[in-house]
Structure formats: C-alpha cells, structure tokens
Image (cartoon, rainbow, N blue to C red):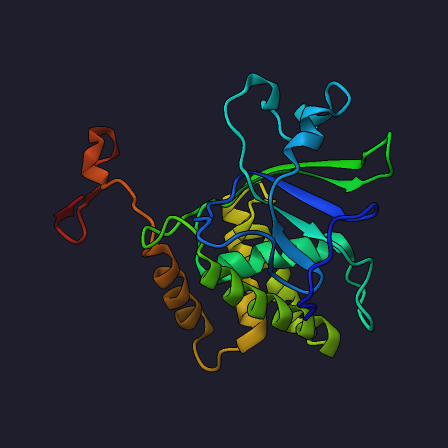
Length: 242
C-alpha cells in the first residue's frame, strides 16, 4: 500500500459524497487504500466551477443545504498485475469502509482533476446510498480509516491473486453495500449466491443458506403482521392466527 500521500495534481480522480461521516479528530488526508486517500472536499473548486457542474456532481449543491467536507481521491493511474482502474480503487475503499463498520454513506459523483482553466473533467454521477447503517457507531474515526486501509489492501490482493469466487462475492457485496442496484431483493439473492459459491456448503444447502439469510435479516426491523389488521392470516390447520 502506498503510504506517502502526494498533493493533488491534474489527473487525480475525486469521489464526492452527500454523506461520509468522519469525526475529524485527525487532519486529512489519510491513506485508505492503494493510491487512495480520504481528502477534504475541494469546495473552492466546486464554488468556482462552470455553472451546473457542481450540481451535476452533487445534486442540490446550489441550494446551499450544506456539503460533506470529506471525499476520496485516487492519485495513481493503475495497479501493477491487475485490471483495477482508479474508479475500482475508489470503490474498493468504500467497500472496505463498509466492511469495517456499516455506517451510512451517500455517494454523489466523481470527476477527474484537469489543468488550469478546465479543472473538472470526465464527470460521472452515481447518486447511490448504502441501504443499511449500523446503530453501534455513527462516525468513522482515524483508527477506522486505518483499519479500512488494511482491508482495501487485502481486497486488492484478492484481485492480484486471481481468487475468482471471492472476486465474484466482492462484486455482489459491493453492489449491495453501496446501493448500486435498485432492487434490494435481487442484491440479497446475488450476495447469498456468492456466499454459496465461496463456501460450497455440504449436506443440506438450503438449510445452510437459510440460516445465513436469517442471521443477516436479524438486523432489520419488520412490522408485525398484527400491526395491520388487513394482514391477518388464519392458519386453520395449525389452529393459529397471526
């Protein structure tokens, strides 16, 4: 992992957020993966950009509702012996953060830093949000960033070593955890299919996977059927009413 963090320069890729909770108990930038750092949001650049560019990257920017003051910056162009792009490296760092602690994150867009006079290039809008947040913590700390950096480095090693099943699982997990898919149900199906591919449970696979799904869904709060009188189901064969 690259430890020395260079100053921003033309060619760097920035990923901007509506929300990325950080407690700012240590100054930025901080390393958070190979060639990636947690950086202060380039607010001056957004404020002086051509009209409409900031609103494209962060919809609602011109409404002055506040701005997340940290972002991710990738300052390398590639990773030797892998097919990872700078965008891949940015999202590996987001996945690493969510693996360390599933705190809510909302992603806006990304851009490449250009030369003087044309500073915001290659705009991409994502506008996705993590679908679930932990109740145990509400901000990332510098220690959490350091832990996420180690996780991101290991995720990159998975790519380098060619562990295809684990790569597939990480792709599905990434889609779930950063909200890239609009279908929550399909995300879960893909994620647990990836778990099955990784661990290949022996014996009763259905039982093994159902236990995993039950354990995962335990974190969610669902309304009880009796909360809605229209949802009463009478199970006559069991003599039970729900």
